[in-house]
Length: 566
Image (cartoon, rainbow, N blue to C red; front, side, top):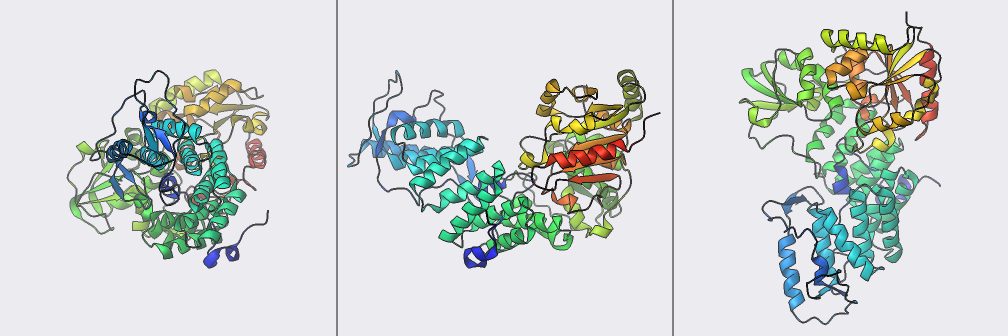
């Protein structure tokens, strides 16, 4: 289809959408409130439909909080809504009633309930995270009123949030056919299409939303993400900035703007926008509430500075390079990090104190996330701390793994460490992960042994591997990053998608062939085959979305150039 450009959007906006590193943008991009479109009085359902087998009471409002569209929180209202529902059910109602649908063997009496009340309860279940209850209620509603666009839309929301993206798309599409003018239905469909990789459809439905309301902030945000996925950075930036003219405090567009700017290498403005990541609706808090300030980079003498390993393992490995620079200004530093990261941080800066839980935190006068340190130090492309290697394998572990691999791998075979999948819950896993069978061009090379460093669900694919090269499932024996680094130390090259394995190998100064999707994470920049963050890394990029074939063909040629092991 013809690509929609800036002039196609009302108000001169450009279509594109944003996807933060954590995936929280989906909560903001996918609001569920249908109140504006709901009929004030509609058909009725039996109250017994609200009885669930678990008989779990709704959470106390004081203990249940859920994000609204722009990220503020308010107590969930489910108990009040049920009370209201009971009151309205007891009062005389002059409404159209639906056929009574009673659960099998239910002892509860059949009491008619207005459709809009039932939809309100379903919506509150969704917003409080009670998705199974929401789905059960919505299934009952749809069985009684199969042509209710509001019920179908809410069911699509539930399907999307539970990972059933294709079913979600089909359900919301049905809702749109029944209610073509409901802008929130189209707004919801845009991120669903994005998650399915249907970027043309996502742009189309987003532009249709803007044709209805050219100042719809959330649609502009959604489109900013989609344009990023299509590497249309000018459009992505334009959409994000247009959204911010409507609400300068909207964290999602700020974060998407950051990703597009950083990917283009505009670090000066990109780092500033990147700070909005902690305000994204639904994002977990960085730390417990504190009255201490975020560190601005000024020396603080002997007072304690607290650093926080705030993002994924790969981010922490990348940004830990800044800890020695921090110590030049603050000699007393503690780092809060997952225990798996402690050996890595000890290698980078053995003098820092390490903490693995908030209860064990020392008193501190200021704090900083590790991922904010590039901004603190004013990092630009030409000032990135660029040590060839700042991590290494543990001597004793490496010796043990050397004996193990010498016993497993045929003599003279090149040892290629591989990883093909990241965490499945990552918001861009559809694009960044691949299938093991796509390593076939490398597996077909002479005298190559594949050493799987894969962990998690991706390991299951090994059972169906029938390639020419022997494949050794070492991931099953790896207990921590020290094991992984020791194995990497014994490889000739590591070929991996964008995961923590890529960061480990490159931080060790080992040859790392990093396989990137068409629209990569911002840190890998555009077009180049090298990385200013990692001198030993070599980047292999998709030429079009989903094209792993050409990537693996290029990577296989590069592996073939590596001489045989002595």
